[in-house]
Image 1: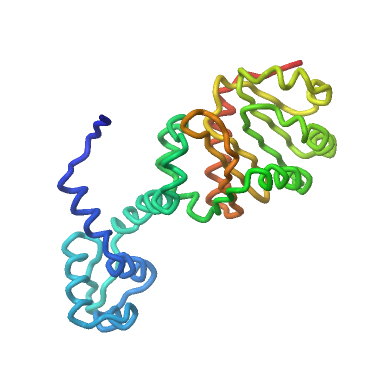
Image 2: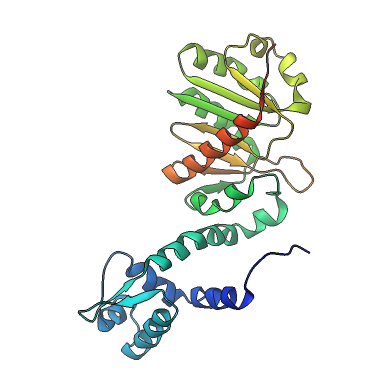
Amino acid sequence: MVKTNVDEDHLSDLLFQLSSADRRRIIEELQTQTLKLNEVAKKLDITATEAFRQVQRLTDAGFLEKTSDGKYRSTPYSKLILESSAAMDFLSKHREYFLGHDTSLIPPQFRARFGELSKTVLLTEAVVNLNTSTEVFKNAEKRIYVMNEQHLNYNGQILRQQSLKGVKVRSLLQENKIETIKEDPIAVEQTWERRIIPRICAIIILTEKIVGIALPKMDGKMDYQVFEGKDPESMKWAGDLFEDQWSRARPWHS
């Protein structure tokens, strides 16, 4: 059983406040504007009585505050809570995926940032995803960062060509798959940077345009279901994780 230093009463109250779709909408609406009670009721299409009840509850909980002109606005505290709850939203949305995939190797500070992946789309066709990776490599203009359990033999020529064109190519490989590099004469040429790490925590393919992220199943095998993202948040998450793992890895030379 995993034990955490959590005040269960405070956490239960917090989760209760966020369990209402109306309360969450009120907090989100008041992040960028101040509204009177009747305006809140109109925005959410609820009665004035219900608006008063929900606003009062959120004010008592510290999510809202009343201004001198009688309007309401969200507090800085509520913004922090919404940012933190984004990770729970993402995990809940993809519950079936996370029931069957292992996140334990991802450093805790990155698991806490799962909310940054909220705009990604889960693509479940493995063959399509593998073929798409080839196009992603071809279309890169500035960088190609790859963290994978094994060397991508079928894309070695593309990576070589891109590196010779000036694209910054880095690949991070799992240590027990080192033989897959030695079997590829193109890879042995050492035209791009490579490092070795004892075990990868995820598959990442990242360019300046797009990111693909895949996690191992509970048995350690990859099924190549991919979270694809083109938004700044998901690309930053993947870039930060890649740099973190890159800094922990050791260089590989043929």
